[in-house]
Image 1 (cartoon, helix red, strand yellow):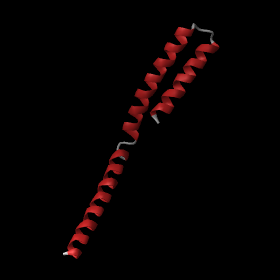
Image 2 (cartoon, one colour):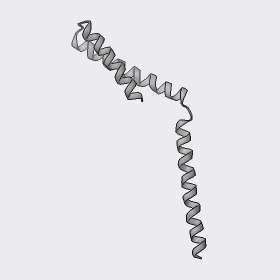
Image 3 (cartoon, rainbow, N blue to C red):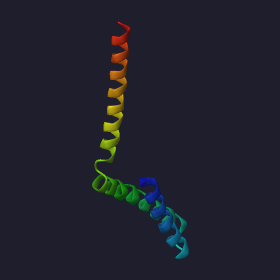
Image 4 (spheres, one colour):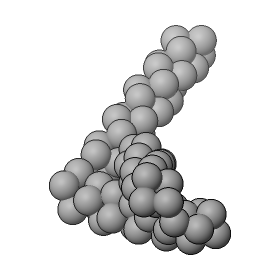
Length: 80
């Protein structure tokens, strides 16, 4: 999501620079600055709005690992 937001910000800044007939170096530098700002702001937004999303994915993966381990233990007990 961060790269999408940053890319859109960079394209908007570069488009505005081209339409205003700015120097090419200025247009590219404004686009680069907009890209960096977009990455930072999207990262902050993700951290504030979706703080538990990554943890929930990790918890579900841990739960699946626990289920697989318990199935393996059950098979070992049946074999013995």
